[in-house]
Length: 243
Image (cartoon, rainbow, N blue to C red):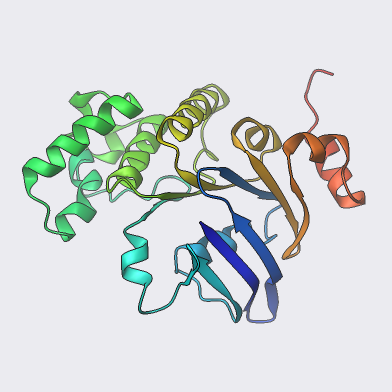
């Protein structure tokens, strides 16, 4: 569905991504994992066209992502960032419907879609006319997920969507995300630094360090057979509290 070919990116003197090849198969959940600054969020932003690689190419269903295709491709991608990125001056309903309003949907069309997504995400209808500041962290993330799903996109890109939530809410939302991913059959790319979250959600895991891919494949293979010292240390550093 999405393919990166030898993509590289520098920010000033910092090499964020170093000649990476990456394939995201259709209908699977690909999790990008690694320490802070390893390049995982930059890769995600390349996939949605917010960052342009200095070299290499990004392909969406085999076609290059460029100025000619970017607008149409973005309508097929749902993008969810850390802390949700909700507009504080808009109500929940207005946040969810912001892109359909730009695309000139009829209000009745938006209302039908919002009703579907309320059921899918288990968000109470009573919250639609509240503002983000009036919601809990978990509720804000459900609203952000609804906004990302509003156009029924083929691809979901999620950048540490659960990073700032407390453990119990995070576990609940992880369960809900896994159910939603499987029910909808979307192609998903999710960024996290949490190994347990990667194992719970991923069909395929890609471990990065200093802008390069260290290891990729099944989560069980990463745990059982880390390919080098960094991969082994990364796994060991996130060992369970209870052995």
